[in-house]
Image (cartoon, rainbow, N blue to C red; front, side, top):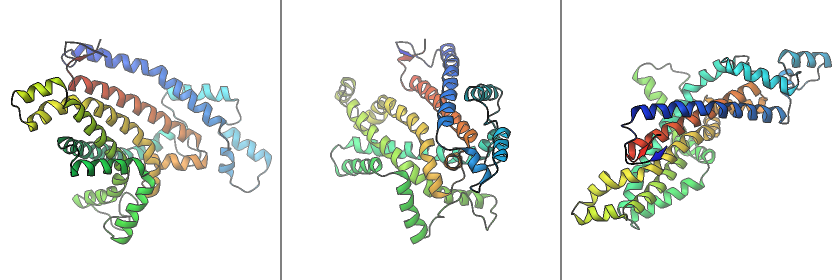
Length: 335
């Protein structure tokens, strides 16, 4: 990706070639991630066989038979080669703890986590951009100081702690929202009632997960807009009589959006990691909760599958971020 006079979005062939090249270059990167993750998890303390047979003493021959059944008796290199070969064929292995293929297990949980993540990204981006713009319009005002203080609080408060506070206030004290889960168990809602039920269960997890990223977006939008509003072309446009509203929304915001888009893509990737704690606090049965449980049960195939999913997500989001650059800035082209 480079800057130039030609528009990046007008060169459809160049953009398509760039996307294909990025995906091709990502293949060795993903393979490297698979190898590193496999080696690190295999060398980590703990033995999954212990969790499989329980804490009670078992005969040595039974322990070795269980180890052989799951292929854990083979040397590390042999297990690595076999695992990489299976992944290339679409086989992510078999879950020790859940007794299911890893791919099926991930697909069961993926929809719930995507629902949580996409809602969080949209909410944090929309509200963060709005607050950042309002703060930049009147620097050092009461609203600007309030937005800055809100952003600092978002930086400082961990998601899991904020989630517990939300449960205490809005679920226990006020009773406005459920304390956990993703739907009601006692009543089987249908139609719009089911949609409302899902929304009520999502409200607190989304609020806990989006607080930090909303604060980051607010702070960066404010800083980028203040910088752009002092550039020469904005000063010249102001001298020609354009209103501050037109300057802000038609010119400055688009130029200031590039670093904000970067952070939004960055946030999307790291929300996966943050969702592990938030999903655990709220009992949300998604990928994050599955990762948390798999760590304690030493369910290595599931952990490897989740790490692979996160790696691919980061690569795809980074690619989409680069494409968004070309839409926002016509000087960017793909060679």
